[in-house]
Length: 108
Image (tube, rainbow, N blue to C red; front, side):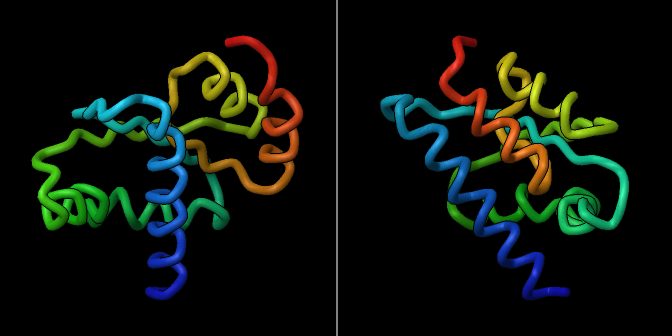
């Protein structure tokens, strides 16, 4: 389980870094992440409960960051929130990811 959480955390950091790559050295004080119901979201639930992102950001010298967790019921709602710019990181699973990647080129 610990290894799975490590991989999920590394993946979130990878995607967060990629998402902010176009933001020319902009720093954020808040990161908005979605999660849902069920075992699929267990790594995210554990990360929220143990405040792992806040701890790792402090260890990396990024200072205090605020993590806002959104609980959504279904990948379609997560996709809508991501396309609307409400989320920075979306935990969706395979069906939601496939839908999001098809709409990726559409205007925001």
